[in-house]
Amino acid sequence: MTRKHMNKKAFTSTLFIIALFIALLSPLMGHTVEIKKTNINGMTVLHVERNALPIISITLLIKASLLNEEPEKSGLANLTASMLQEGTTKRKSTEINEEIEFLGASLGVSVNRDYTTLTMSILKKDLHKGFEIFSDILTNPSFPEIEIKRKKELIKGSLRQREEDPSYIASKAFIKDVFGSHPYSRVTAGTPESLDNIQRDDIVRFYNKHYLPQNSILSVVGNISSEELKKLLDKHMSDWLKRTKSHEESLAPQVSLTSTFTSPKVTILDRDITQANIILGHKGISRDNPDFYDIVVMNYILGGGGFASRLMKVLRDEMGLTYSIYSSFSVNKEPGEFSVEIQTKNESAPTAIKEILNQIKKIKQEFVSEQELSDAKSYLTGSFPRRLETSRKIADFLTAIEFYNLGDDYIKKYPEYINKVTIESIKKVAQKYLDTENFIIVIAGKKEKIDLSELDQLKNLK
Image (cartoon, rainbow, N blue to C red; front, top):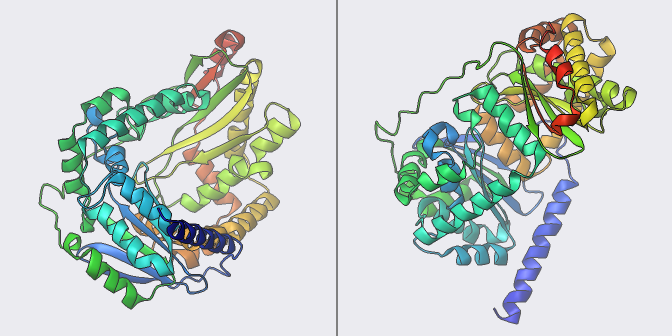
């Protein structure tokens, strides 16, 4: 690379970093986002024009995840996605990386329980070249055998490394207990064994079946007009946008989630560590649950509100059992999990668990205070604009809103949804969705220092 090219690369990278920094310091005022929504051969296109900064953020959501895998080939969705940047019919993986770096852009792909996302952020002046690369890896992946083998080994190495992390092994055991044979019980990356079962033909078949416009949501946010966006799509994605599903491709695998336990279950993973990693919880809710907003407020008060939450105040501030504790509802297309996570001394594990259950019972049996409700509402509505601070955040947020069918007016109505919550509705959802009888506890810690007899007594709690 010549000195001239190196200087240009450094200059564009600096511009991009400065622009991103400015964007982070420029929160969106209010909740108004003007969204232009169109449909191209089944692909929903969401466009927000913001001309304050010369940045465009692109997010393509593809409805392909572990929900679409065969159990013996878990990790297929993740492997397919990670291979997009490893070579196309036009470019080698090194060329893709070099071109993106030269443009000072960011390009990434990720897979969660429900979908895959392909993202790019780029300066306006480099948009045409950047979108050409973005479209190339989406529409022309070559899936070279040598890169598949290399990627598998990298993922296996990462999985082996994770096994050294007590919080990871606890989480893996917890979701396995909660979800049983449901796909959500699996690690997105798969296992070394399942990765060995995946061949190139499996990746090509998965790509051809799921990477279709009818399976996709595209959001583009930033300094770009509707006319410019249309020209980009016509020039770089027109052939791919003509693809259609076959009848077989339209049939999604049928999965269902049922409780895999009917009484408390305690699992201890023996590790030679001083701090026990504890997860307590059970099956949760899906994103379309009508009680979602009441649950959000209730969980904020219980353990999702950081230092303002009851669990933090009691177990950290009053009892001194931990530095951090939090509760959460993981919401997905299908019911996710409710969990409370804490690290504490091995010897303190039974005491911490008992107090967690006491706090859960308390929020089920008693009304929260008006002050707690007011504080929760203020934080949740006041912090909401942070989700819309930058073009990148908006682009990601819009695809999720569309995927979960939250409504085109969701951004505007979110504060209204939160403000409708009452102390009565909080108690109602706590009683309905928090379980102090049929729960799961997973502990990764020094087994000999954890009083198992006391843990056994927890099974009798009602």
